[in-house]
Image (cartoon, rainbow, N blue to C red; front, side, top):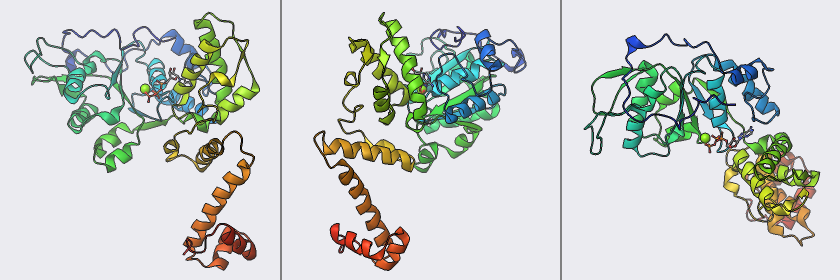
Length: 388
Ligand SMILES: Nc1ncnc2c1ncn2[C@@H]1O[C@H](COP(=O)(O)OP(=O)(O)OP(=O)(O)O)[C@@H](O)[C@H]1O
Ligand SMILES: [Mg+2]
């Protein structure tokens, strides 16, 4: 369970004494860990890092191992991964497993506030700094002194604020908005993004120097579709949880249902799975959880967003393509295999032919198929004119 202080809800927004360097305890001066963190820390190095964290796939075991390894250091950690993959859970675990566990854990969602509000939220302000600044206010960096600050959705931070953050990372110092007095803090920085920051750098939206400062230890949370082995355990976990929450007996989960859930691409990852299970439990009136309690796209009956496959592996893109092919063919189709396979076959022949400037002998060798077979397929798919 989480340490009571590991929350951002209880942060006192009113004036607090400014923390100056000379009053700081030496960094890492809190050797006492919260009991739950200690328990999880004594576990196998690749066991889940926190109560309620589910998943024993190879990819997740690597995440747990890395989390344990870096937790004890004060290195900046950059959590990368699509929405709903568990970045916030890992951020909290990093704090709980660190020597700062008895200090505060402060989360700031950089995507939720405008530039000026975020600046004052992070660094605080002095009375009169701007209209409505009626009193002095401490910022989140000061509140995180001796603990951890978790900067969520860091990709949303404006260029101007990125400069100020870079200074905190390099010098551990900053000024409140409207003040000239320099404040020093000792806090560990964890940042998270569900966008590829190198793309943001290319687009001129993210500073490269800040990226390198943040990316000291990157921890990548893999999407659920790349660790489908974890789906059954997650389903059972959420079924139990929501049955208890709704005061219902725990329904049976069939292999058929698990197969459906393993075959869906889960663009919203664990969060989407969790929400769908909650909904199914609320709707369930039987002793068994059935697939009709899930929305049509999860059942493969409505198109899913292929756009998500961008940057995915060949396997995951293929899975999504096939799902879409099956969906589009409709439930009454009796030629699903032919339809999907010929679509892919036509495309691969077309692209290789083009790459070989339409020379069939070359293309047949590249494809690894017989020349006559290729000739016949070019005719069948009417590729003669397109391939040149
Ligand atoms: N491995 C897991 N085991 C159990 N629950 C999980 C796991 N991963 C994520 N969750 C749950 O899924 C939800 C989303 O997780 P979390 O908020 O950590 O995702 P995120 O990566 O921060 O997403 P976003 O980028 O949208 O902020 C939470 O309710 C969390 O408890
Ligand atoms: Mg998050």
